[in-house]
Image (cartoon, rainbow over all chains, first blue to last red; front, side, top):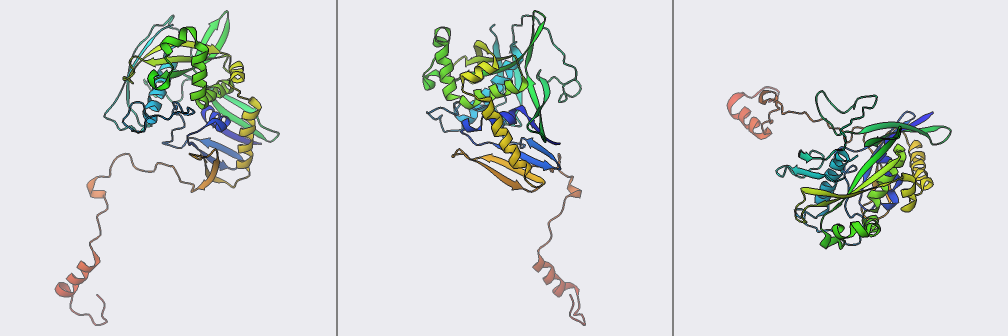
Length: 87
Length: 264
């Protein structure tokens, strides 16, 4: 009996892959009859995106507080804090 | 229920996202400070360390007669309502500058909630779909989406919660055209392809431009961090080898007398 191991965020990335715009990557390891799906160290798989599927693009300059990387950081932190505060 | 979130990012640290230090100062209004302890302690918490409160549910699915899938799922909160326990996931959408997006949540959230959500579904379709997929995988009863806005458009560090909306994951999935069959179909296809591979390490990469995914084979030790934590002390470090010509000239002029068989 073969077994596949993954986390919910990896499965969600695969399941919603047709809706993704930005690039992402997942490490796959085949060991015997097992399959492991992992996040690569340093990848941004768990970071949240902002306006990924919007028509208008965000400011390009990395120092801009509304650039994609800055907003991604802000959204990830905000999301994390929110989950700790509200119930 | 309103709350204020204050968080200060360490500005001196480069924005390398995975190694981020964060100072969080938080003022909360809690209805009742009940903490629900799940059976096993958080495996990522070390002694005395406070980790974000989350519950992991390990769940197993049968993909077909020969393959089963085990996944670690997350739930963020639990509510007791009339003796029933409700598992919830919590996620937040964030508003950064309504002048850029064209939708002002402070004006529209009260009376045109649908319009706000529709814009978010357009601009953040992938993100919201992933949240929904995760709630479905975790078998959460409710998924809550918060609307969090910057206190001032130019201040990315201070936010306020403008509203929270709860949904039943299956219903919300229908609302965003997220089809369960399609979702599992993708997973099954990827698993089938990977099961046919030889033992080894691979990377599944989504093309940055095209709607295309590629599978690459990589060396077995890829992505492993084998570097030492601290630098080796001076004595143990490898010293650079002196240049070949210098030693050769030295030997002929200073040291050696010509050897019989011409060796140096």
